[in-house]
Length: 425
Ligand code: AMP
Ligand code: GLY
Image 1 (cartoon, rainbow, N blue to C red):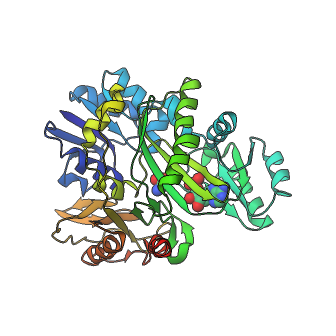
Image 2: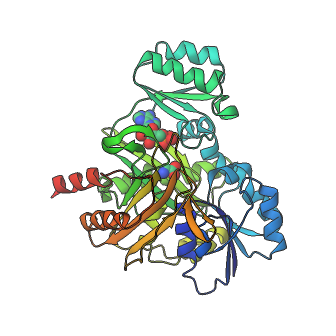
Image 3: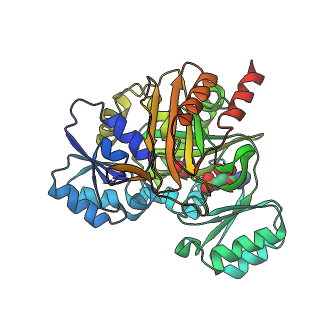
């Protein structure tokens, strides 16, 4: 089969490495890919957001199956465009990708169908939003409606911060049209869990749970980032909690989307908070999470391409989705200064990998035959092991064998999960 993968990050590198294991794969293109992905796929310089160019490329090159993983192309309708050209796809259509593309849509869906989430108000009028935050309970969580590179959420501890958040999102439009509306919601507390799930709109099969580490610095300090590391499985996500989530969140979400005439097919990501009142949805994503995918896919024992084809064909119920009982840890190496300002262009020295070690490249390009840094998050160093403590230790050991100038990583990926495991035992 000839496969097209749209995207250019560590997540796409992990997806491509997993797809490559399927014997029927003869060719993989990545649009646009990156300098590291180039070792595993042919990278073509077409921006995924240019969905017409993506569909043209697929049609002209006889692509049999297209996998669209990033939020922007999905929300713009890349799958509709590709399907319109007769290309089978993995990923939701535009009318279902809205579950991530509009937080107002997602919140109203949850309210309508009784899916547990934080209490909220939505506003499309700046003055009304401003009046509301002037007396809303603190901390208040202010969210831009649309996509904002994972930066559209402000947890405001003070009145001034809440007002500033509404100002910058709605008045200054720092995220452009994504800030035409806002959601202002109740602040929840509890451990966070990411659950990625395959669904063909008829059945839903969750993947192994994971935990992201979103803040830039140790002890969850510093600004929010795209994610500085992950572990899987997430020890807070017990079998009992998983059963509650299936009944109260996963199945109702699939049914709600069908009811709305927006059948979701692809990978549905549930960002959950385990509160004292039970699990609640913090966010939906219409795609694989990053860096969650960099720990989840190394634990997948079934054939990823088979599963993706089954999702596209509506055969997920009869398709095996099996995960190892091992654990995995991914430590992200970023450019110092990320997510604010950082320098790039430094040569990356990659080590030889041992068994159960993986390096997924996110922000790097080829220059004069060398691999050099080109982005904020440069790569993910993942290790898989029988237990979480060993996976964390090995991921850090692997990250220590990778060198580039200006590299930065958190030192406590997995620490909270390991502390929770200790308490359990
Ligand atoms: P999101 O982009 O929606 O995942 O939000 C980014 C981060 O903000 C989440 O991972 C949470 O840590 C935090 N957050 C979002 N909504 C809430 C909430 N209602 N209460 C507490 N924290 C939240
Ligand atoms: N790691 C969070 C996300 O992919 O949105």
